[in-house]
Amino acid sequence: MTELFNKILFIDDDENLSRVVSFQLRQMGFEVATASDGEQGLKQFKQNGFDIVLTDLQLPGMDGMALLSAIRRLDKRAIIIIITAYGSVENAIEASHLGADDYLTKPFGKETLRFILEKTIRFRQLEVENLQLRSELYQKYDFHNLIGKSAAMEAVLKLTGQVAASDATVLIQGESGTGKELIARAIHYNSPRKERPFITVNCPSIPENLMESELFGHVRGAFTGALKDRKGKFQLADKGTLFLDEIGDMKEDLQAKLLRVLQEKEFERLGESDLNKVDVRVVAATNKNLDDLVRDGQFREDLYYRLNVVSLMIPPLRDRRDDIPFLVDHFIQKYSKGQHYRIADDALKMLCEYDYPGNVRELANMIERAIVISKAPLLTADLFLPLQHIKRASRLPDNANSMHEDMTLEEIERKAILQALGASNGNQTKAAQRLAIPRHVLIYRMKKLGITTAS
Image (cartoon, rainbow, N blue to C red):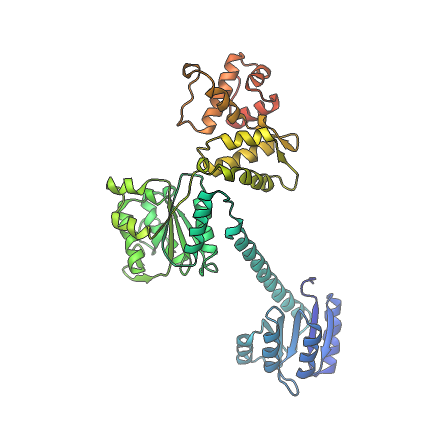
């Protein structure tokens, strides 16, 4: 049935049954060995190892329960299916407590045998895949895999590693795109809570009238549209970590309720008076200056101090330029899909000199876009159109362009293209020459930005 679970040991003192079942199993594609008693079966298991064990409970000498316990001590991964002639629910329950995966009741036919095997194998495969995914997840968020070679980021990662092992509430501050959620996940997946849920709440994205229900849940009839009971994020994150992103946007009435949960470890769902106990670690993040919000009366001072047990300040990318070459390599590998791309020296120099108002997220988008539009494995400077224009615009007198510091990268790019098209009377070839980029790159960017010649 599967190469992962192919070797079966069948243990039963009934020679006729053993012969028939062995034949059926071989027809299904399994490699089969047999034993007639518990001692012989255990000896074979120790010597050869098996993926699946089918064993009768009623065996001469060592009975099936003792055999089950002995095999389970030797191998936690092997599938064990017990066989009983009595159909005893008590036996099945006791066997499951000892580590049996399923049971068969005599007499059983070939299709029943096939069904039980397929079911237990499928379930064990899901367990194996889940373990693999968890292993990959832990590796992904291992502190050694977080990219930060600069002194500024090394200091952040060192403190992050120290706080992860504790249960302290953490406040992560930094501009948009600096990787605050990445740090939050690293804290969780390197903490004692890593086997439990990591639940994210993006505060600005949830309508104000639904935020309380989102956090704490509700009971049926609590408000119009509440057709059934619903768990909130705090309940879903029980024993795990709740990440409150952009907490500076949370309204004051909810701030008070959040403070209560942090202090008392309990809350009420909307529409009920019963208290729900919860064990949740809170990690919050914001791109706003909470000190200013507290001073202006927009954020509760007591909540601020309760959240700010440990403070992590993520530096903007312009303050850790030493990390840019490493990040460029990382994003090239991430978006190249197995192809071999590299970046030209002048392009890398240009990337290292740029200020990145969108921080790491902006750099990632730029590398992905360059790979998409590149016709060669070498990523050249002309693929980074906005940066090319910024360099030229910085050399023009102030009255020669209308670029502003608060413009986004997309706005600057759009304006650069429109200016070039306007100066070229809509001729795309001439506009591309003015921008010092290939015509196909200009056309791609025009489509991406929704620009027509008539714009």
